[in-house]
Image (cartoon, rainbow, N blue to C red; front, top):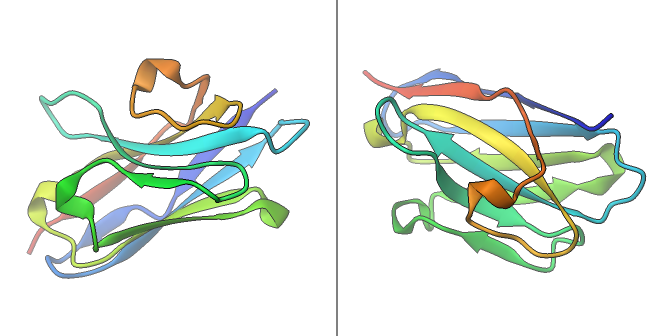
Length: 125
């Protein structure tokens, strides 16, 4: 049974940092990409970033995050991270990680096979 568990969310002041973690279990191989998505109240879920199984392809989907967010992957520990720096109030959302079986990433949420329960990130003074 595949499970994804996010952690690391919380309340942070503008300009602060958080590192989100996505623990993955249940896969029999490493052939899956991991995407981070977020959903703010009243808004649709949007893709944030994605990393392939061997970390050879990394994509950031939001112009607003470029240079501030960094995705990384530790296959030895089955964990994917999203380092978020210089956080802004508009980054406030529930952040989800999701697994897409196979090699490629996608910014389409419907293509992902497994989802975590989400972790709340609130950026506020």
